Length: 367
Image 1 (cartoon, rainbow, N blue to C red):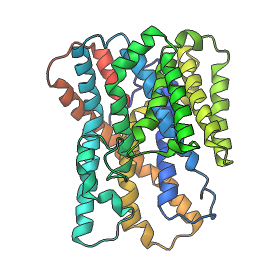
Image 2: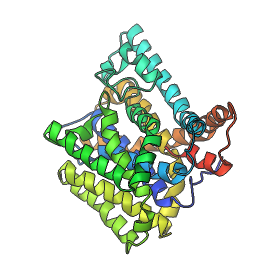
Image 3: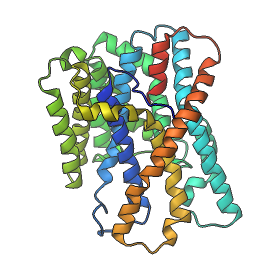
């Protein structure tokens, strides 16, 4: 079996928390959608804060995009190579999972089967998914493999990346300021932080502020290098998210802690403050994208054809939710090793490029 590696020796904390963020999103979706029993069981109704793990992805993406590309997107050709490598990393698995859900939807129609979240299989989501624009105003409901909306939002941020770099070079803090203005505007528009729940239709607007803040953090290594005890701060912020999240704290507080956790993790990586746990879990960060998209297939398959047919108690329901992560990890590993990596290399081989091999590997592994 192939051994997992970290995307970069400089980003162990970011790799590790990407893995746990993907697991948290899967847990949030499954806890809400398998067999919800309101008010019953340990997890029921307490896990919605896990959806902010998507915003953590956007922050980390901004950090990594700055670290890898801020000196390399200097021409239109460089940008073309960059987009080719982003498509090579993201599109093959998206297309595969979308195709699976599309065929599942056809099968349910042909055999008149009940579908959980039946709107996901409507054909009005076909073109938005094929062109990865489901996070923009194209369709007003989740479509097929619903988690893929964030990949669409990421692609929107990537397209604007050269403009963000221009803004950064004028004032290094400008992207973060623009992101904070965006957060304030969206919060006033919604009269709350409900925009942090947006997925389809407005998902790109949700992603943009976090990506911009991450971009500024990526260029603020000179400041983060001076933060004392980054490992302690990272532990405190991470614990705070879970403790306050399960306690029902406001999303504004939790979003702030999400940003602080990303900043502390990056500070740890800059200062080489690593623990045994981080070195152990960092390689699993390579499965982040696989876990994120594939859990969207396992959930409707098990719910529609297995779990909803069983007389489950609340605690057995919770146990099955957690137990489902074992096959998810195995499938994600084989997807990453034997489908995504060969597909990525094949797409990257199309045409010529002049990015260094190290940059190619790092930029192709990250989300």
